[in-house]
Image (cartoon, rainbow, N blue to C red):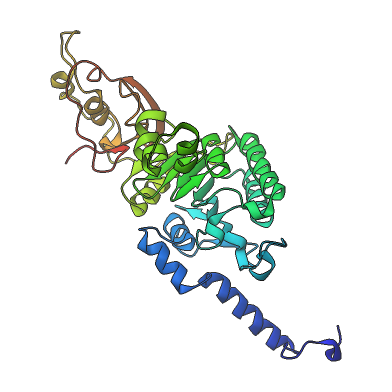
Length: 361
């Protein structure tokens, strides 16, 4: 295009074009509007970029396709084409190790998935599989963008296909941080670990209105698919927390216990717990009478490094404990019966950080 062909007001030199690019990128980073950000915070939720900052090491995030916009028309979509198209994708590090991530931006189309939105997710999933690094999804979306019809549904098909391809190859972690319905709930259920936040996150195939129309039953969003329902009844949720900050912090901790892929071992850390320390307290914890119940959680705390372990499904099927911990700095998996459960003994109080147990000093 020659100078004569350029539109009025369009930069004509390289410096002007670079300045315009910086302005567009700043607009993409800021999001749709301050009002939308305030509305997100008013619900007790962080924005997508704030969540990514909590998850990844400071300054490590590298964004992919920040300026992508949808190409759909009809239903007024051609008049609204925000940058990122409602999902932020890229990679960074957690404790120095590479992690790929995508985060729905609820401020844009309610985080709903369209063709361009799905294409970005497909790309970052392919990159994670090729690099052999974990994939974390920060989910806060209303399912398919119905204005885009079959194109949106096909996008979900591509995500599901990649979920199955990555299964057993790289760790896949889904963090539910808002209302996620339909396809937005299918994909997390295919991943290795699901984190949820009480009161603000839900996952269900269809919402309370449809349930009422079909069955006549009235139910709330939390009653249908809240964190406690999935952590205690369905077993879909592995970890449930009271706030986003704690939830994302524990995602980082889980990543520190996992290998990058199926060809590597989990990272070893230096252990301050003496390998030859005595565990005489076990004589008091485990009764000589095999018919007496006891708390296996306290036994595990005495055995593992620093008394710290991460229990998976802490509130579901409580008669068994499945956990990750370290022995001499090496990550180990633990499967143990819990004699205290189903034996008429009151349940032990929930740990301050649900899912993680730490021995008291």
